[in-house]
Length: 389
Image (cartoon, rainbow, N blue to C red; front, side, top):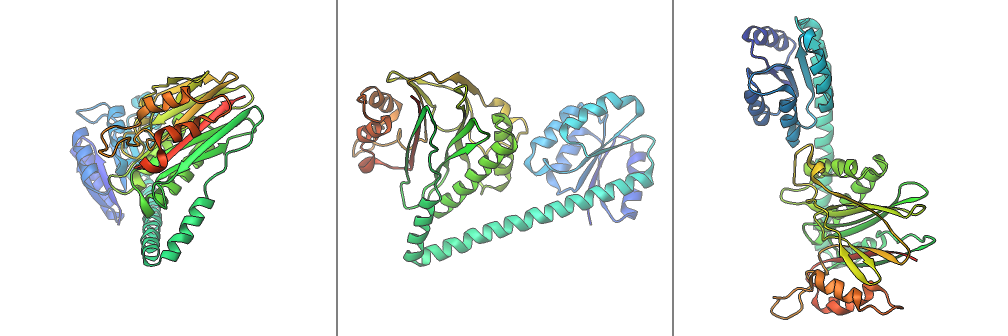
């Protein structure tokens, strides 16, 4: 049995709709204002929202924005009821993924048939998603039990974990240097290289909140999800992070998040652009002098707002010959430099090491030595340096 929320300030309309929908086998909730609609939708697992376009208390577009900003309501079907005179406003509501509309006065039989079709599709989708999520979590639980039970299994998982890490691509005119050092046997950092087409390479550095087996599993899931988002959105960085944030907000365990940095390099034009979501600021290196690129952006998986990605800044530049772009997780800058753990290596340590790098040496090797990473590490560490020769 599906649950439908009817929102209309006309009690007669609500009564007529309730009667025909209950006769068709639906359960019905009612609201007579925009605020009541939000509260009822938040408190109940509704299968469809049937909204009048002129509810008291809030403009229709603002109401739709608030409803869609709730993660639990982001995919719930919404149908609009409107008078013929409201056609222009009705058209604008489709930006919030309205599935259907009906004009007043209502054809109740047609409306009931439409609601039946939409609720059946939504219930099938929810069942499929619930089943997939239960299967996924069940696999995590089984994997943790098996890996904790036998050291040999853990060693095998570590071997596969290392084997699964992507290799830096070979490109004419560019050199990619990479450090990937899990703090334990399985890490929460991740990175990826994704060819979007013949010329455009996407580069990802990320960090899961957590360590150990679950951190490794979640980072592998996040890496593949971001890769899928980049390909699906054809390298549009804001659309890609919006897609990834929406999926991660729904699927990550409570309290978890994904910090990441996603850049796209055009190897033909040497254009570079990136978005940063919670990891340290990237560095643009020119003649061993480092410029910190302070682009705003918070981690993925924490905000349920549909327009969250609009608060993330995008940086663009051209990589000239001899210039490098360095991306990193927080493991290297949080590497403590004394036994009391009061002083961190920090960004200043990174930029100082870059400046002191000898002409024939790699920046990352100098940074690792300066931080004494092997002895001082307290977290996973990942650094990617892309240099144009």
